[in-house]
Image (cartoon, rainbow, N blue to C red; front, side, top):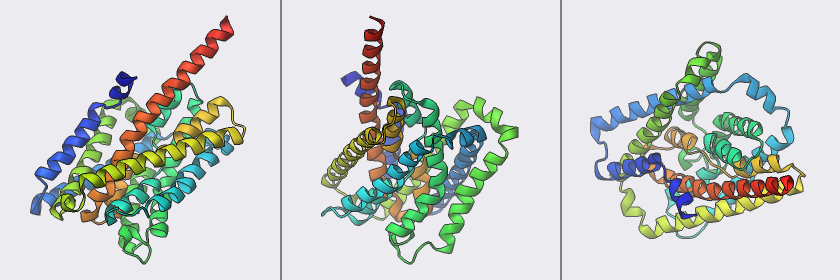
Length: 330
């Protein structure tokens, strides 16, 4: 069991922690901060362009068939999660930007890679997981900013709804690259599918760039003088409570809706996840630079906690399936 848990701490997590440490010790200042910001913006554009090129129209049409399952995942991701986030965001003692980050976490779309991977390990409906996770990220490009404006009093918590500049940033950095990549899929889709190593570099590199610039700006503004070790422990505890509540909710919903074992597994894993890959660039677009570092703290902590918990749960499902198959053969 311990080995399984430790195996979740992949090199990228260590790179993420190292980037936070680097930004804390050597934050980008002055002209270097401007250059790093432009590099992060370019990384975000390229990231969403490639994600658009990866999503096949076959997956879109196929996904539309299992509408009850996808609607359940959507309701969990963009309704139940935000309601829990509103409740947890009012816990006394949370620093303002961190409380905003906890709510922002609950407004994000589901993950893609890990949701599919854990569904496969648990022997669930992998095709449905691909569709649900892909739809969640596609819809999240529009729904997440809208929920931020509705539930957080405007972008960056500044009130007054979404500003014109924020809309332009969302459209130009997220939506336009995604649509452009998808429209060019007939010509570049095969190449993109073959370049898994390149996609990994772009995915992780863009996240690391945004994390470095975000935390650097927050450190310059005094992040670590406002957020203590006790605050971090409180955030981690709230993330655990949040994940446990959603895992229980999705498990009960799968039974109540009469889903097959395979579809209930999809709801459990796709419905309980929040995407770091989408959350980091979205935060960079939606929030002022000085707030992004604090806003991302809950997102990064929840990301690691969900990987550990879901790895253990997926393995238990797989073991149960193996036992059932053995009994059937006997």
